[in-house]
Length: 115
Image (cartoon, rainbow, N blue to C red; front, side):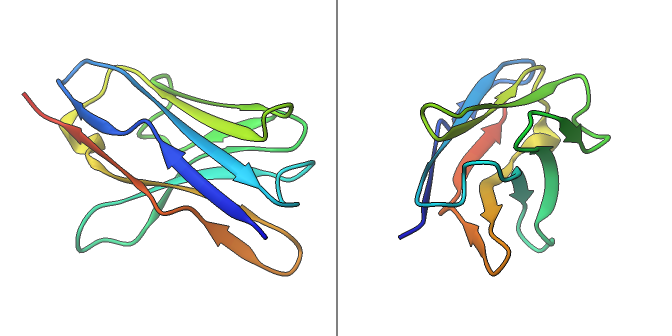
């Protein structure tokens, strides 16, 4: 059974940092790309960052230079280090992975950037 469980969200002041974690159980982690998305009320879920099975990364323009995605293959965990946070980074952040047949979402973790 595949499960993705995010953690690490919370309230942080502008300019602060948070690290999100996504623990993955099941067969989707090894060798597959993993992604972080975010969603604000009334808007579609948007891709934030991707890391391939080989460790190559890609970022949305809005987070380049501030966010870093990484993975620990021994722990089946993907991370999102978020620095220099801004109020417009406020959203629910979701981890996503997929096999050839199906995609899987985590339950999401709320990140709020506010003074």
